[in-house]
Image (tube, rainbow, N blue to C red):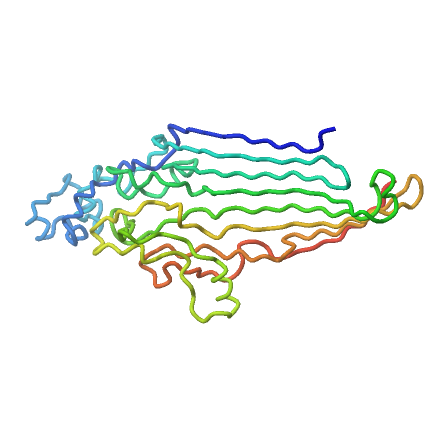
Length: 337
């Protein structure tokens, strides 16, 4: 009788017309950044009038008051601070993955189901509702928005197994008594990140410039754990921060992408275990003692690093603690009849 199955599969998915925030209706053309600090000046200021900028409509200044700036006047619809499009469906995605699975049916006291997924997802639409999308850097050039997905994980490994220990009463009769150990193991790749800037560009959002020739990579997050445990005095950088440089002013758009496949958040690692002891009381009555441990090895998964290049903590993990619960256990005693 076959007791083990191995399967391999390729999975491919192409998504089109996905909800996105790629085309904010009221985002001005980035060419207005050439006006520099004049953008924050009132539209009726001498400097604005000298530049040939006029009120977009007669009641503009009275309606917006102090908000009647040159930038507001140059928006496609200057009568509105923002125009939200809930039906922007210009997003698209590509997903490709190799899936491997091994299954061993229960025999000789052991059974398991193990799977490995190696995948890559590229998209410019990471959320299901366009109202919650970040503003694109420049809707007139959306190239940097198509990048590795926020949810991309290079690998996923999951194993569920049960093993009946080869000792204790009843082992000669169907392995239905004695000690049993079970576990669920979950190992995943970290999700991608990308650098940002704040209070600059258009609509208060920008990204830094890429430094040519500098390799982008993520470092070992155990360095952050050691820092929080007091094993090192200096908070470590978790990725190559010198691969990026700030834009020279708030009126210049950077050229970095939304995410990078080589820059990752901490990879999740977690193991859940249980130990079960069966007791035979009478022919029709039995008892079960069960000990469950969640995050059995008490792993710590630090939070993701600061990705704002304007912060002094750029590249550092600033939140002390674990992104998963500490080890927890519970005991259960049950009588079955």
